[in-house]
Length: 228
Image (cartoon, rainbow, N blue to C red; front, side):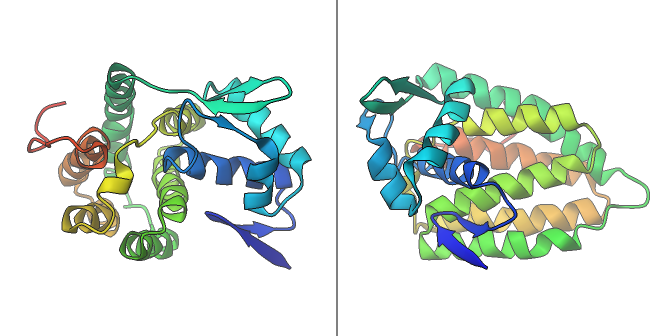
């Protein structure tokens, strides 16, 4: 038995606190919960279709990660990041994710990523439909599951936190554009390169893909991806 809340399918065996945390990350990173504004815990709980308690517990987790600030008896605010903050986050992700993807693509025998194909295809579909909360939730899952193949759990957790701290302020401006659809299509392409053992190609695509966070997705012009 399951119910649906924005961005995820709620399955009974998954703690509700974790489900709410996942949904809240999607709402924050898609800018549905705008940074700097005061948000009511009750209104967010209503939006997710759950009680206040698991939402409050999830928010406390996100506060510990530095994503939000709780305001006693008032609600919470999403932390507003500067352009310099976002540039630093993307730089750190490039330093961690690009060589790790190359390492995964270099594994012998090549990793079987067939279990990630449905995720990649759903990401493309979400981009086409404009469902950005689900898009970002699935995007996060796909990227982290690829990195898991390298066998470094600490790295995966570190990248997960960096992703959560990266608020995509300009994302709503590119929804529906051809450039955004091309960005979504890079996910199945990345799987192809990894399974083909093309470490150089996978690393180059990952580098270019990450630059979208401070280019296409932030309303900035992008370079050719050859410089970080």
